[in-house]
Length: 516
Image (cartoon, rainbow, N blue to C red; front, side, top):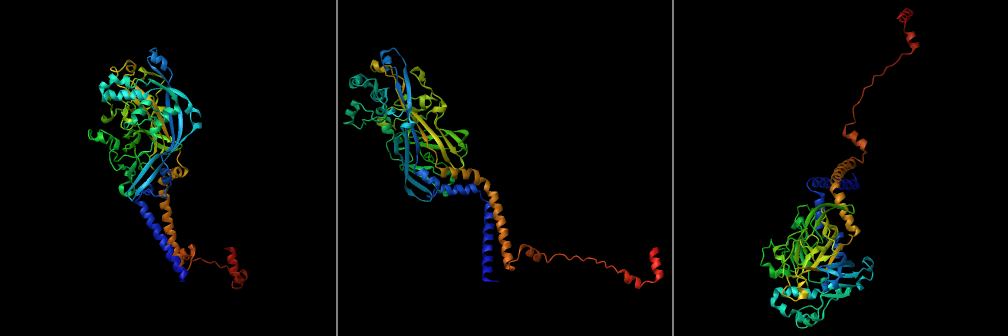
């Protein structure tokens, strides 16, 4: 044999051995698990990485309430406030995740949620909506009364003298309430204390704050633990709540972030009973996701999760705001807002709460479709395909009967300041394509690949034998392998010519033959 033939034989044998190895290996593995193991390694080259680095991304839609009967309410002609919702007031939001440390099992990164905040006039209720004038309750006045009622009960005697310059209602532009809400008294007090003078909701909510997560990655930690948090800002308890954490058992109080997620990525192969909690940094707590069944979104089968349930009882450590017992469907966020003001989150329009808002208001239209926060998660890859994160900020007003006449009327009211919805943007094409491939192709391709490996191994072996036998064709190889086949003996009949027969036969014999 020539050198070229030897090379061909070796290559064919190597190809055959590799194909047999892949066939045997495929018997004991699941291709979906192999893909998932590569996904949880969180490599820089993965398409999901670029999408994650520039997250969260989407639209922040804000809604404010205009009081239309302030004068009639002050005059005592109306006993309830009539509110008109104005919105959406839409902003484009793009965040950024900066990787600080990384190894095979952990990654530490700093999350900057609001790297880009851009007003979208064409997607708002009107291009000039920020210039619209509205009337709102004076939340500085009411918040101060609610806080002092608990911290300094006797302050009610001099409260009106201190806040004499503050009206019960404030009329100004929507931009003012969202970005520049300040009062003369606050400006004066801020010079001698730690009080912030600007209490505008977006001005404070969109401030960059320290968020440094340490999360699990890599198959060594278990694919079910992918991106589960080990520490937030190098602690296991949310810093704003650390002063309260010692008062409650960990299972009663959602302050511990260990095992929770940051709502950007989830583990693969999520099941309906898989425990999923997310860190809601805006409310300084961990929120459990509630499974609500399957839903098809843009042709993708997803699991639907809600962040709050109707009439959900708040945890014991979050059911009170400055001694004010909160209603079901609400929870305390006073440690998360500016100046530690009395504040509670609920679903928008008080949807799902036990608060009887109709006793104090007209104009709200609570419903699940518009006001319940939810996440749609593709369960095989663990990639959220869309979400609508909705919450309303309220000021719980306690019994103010010991205060002046003008404040008594607000006793036991929940005063909303605004509500917002963060709507996740569309996933990049490469991420959607990868997700579709994992869901629709990988789980069905294993038997076909195994069949291909087996055929390739057989072909490689036959090719090596053919080359070794002098580049025989398949037919010649078959004949050689089978020994040339079976010989068939055929009987040959020979006919004697008539003339020759006549020469050797007597006349009598011919007559006898004729008779016969």
